[in-house]
Image 1 (tube, rainbow, N blue to C red):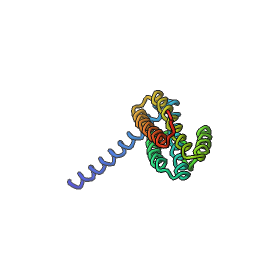
Image 2 (image 1 turned 180 degrees about the vertical axis):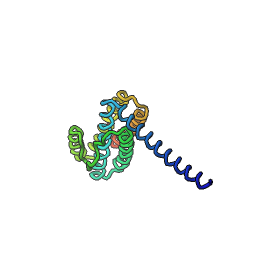
Image 3 (image 1 turned 30 degrees about the vertical axis):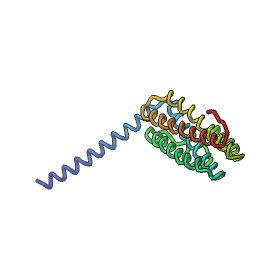
Image 4 (image 1 turned 60 degrees about the vertical axis):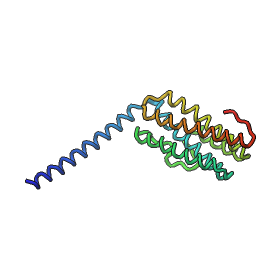
Length: 185
């Protein structure tokens, strides 16, 4: 009798596991189906925009060896990871998959990377101004993405990224002020 009870318990656990897996699969599918084209656009665009920031900062750190670029690049990697989690959760393809440093699916972001790395190569001051440009652009885009997005989970991530970008902007502006360059964001 005890042996029969153990077998039934194991069967019950297997059935529960299958039901749980099926529930998660169907929830993930309904999440993706629930996103409109604008929300999918912003998820993919923000993934690459965060990659652009990280890649430019890594380039500028290699160019100038200034710690601010390395620190903020690490933060941008966390931003990329947060967006990747959302892409996976909602079943949206990752535009950054298989792309190396400085490589982008979006031609506009590819061009922007090329322009910003060229500008940032001119001097440390220009490199810091590139940081200001990236963060101001990111702030504007995040504000638009938040306004265009319904799911609370995505809005929460965007809001957290926005706070991070505001902090990054403040750091770049402060560094420029220390160097005697007045920069108004």
